[in-house]
Image 1 (cartoon, rainbow, N blue to C red):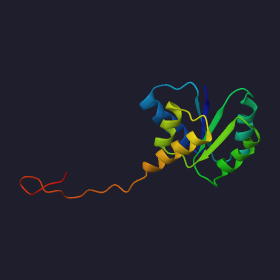
Image 2 (cartoon, one colour):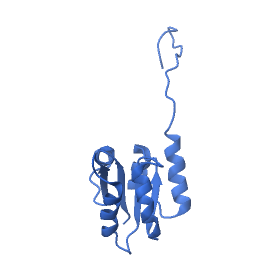
Image 3 (cartoon, rainbow, N blue to C red):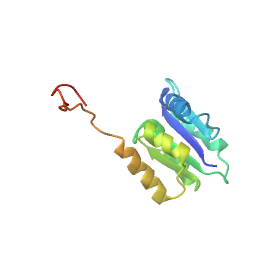
Image 4 (cartoon, rainbow, N blue to C red):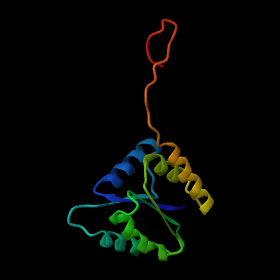
Length: 135
């Protein structure tokens, strides 16, 4: 089973975990760590490092590529069983929780799928039988 870790600034990771579990039910392989004011990203990542077992696959989703948590988590990439993805959103989080990717090809697929969920949503007026209204 792949261990999945959400990391973020403040409570975003915890909120994303709660949203995933609201939709998909409790996930024992899922955890969240948020950087709170006064804390150091490297300290959180060091705590995570100490819990990683060599035989477990670990997938980390970070909130911002180039952000302090993602940058700190890059230190874990010296472990061959750790994968780091940046720019998490709910679509990506759900997909990796429900079907954890096992290869680089699968990782690219879940990233492509998550990107398709980024859309400009607008209402367009559509004529119906009476020529008025939306949808």
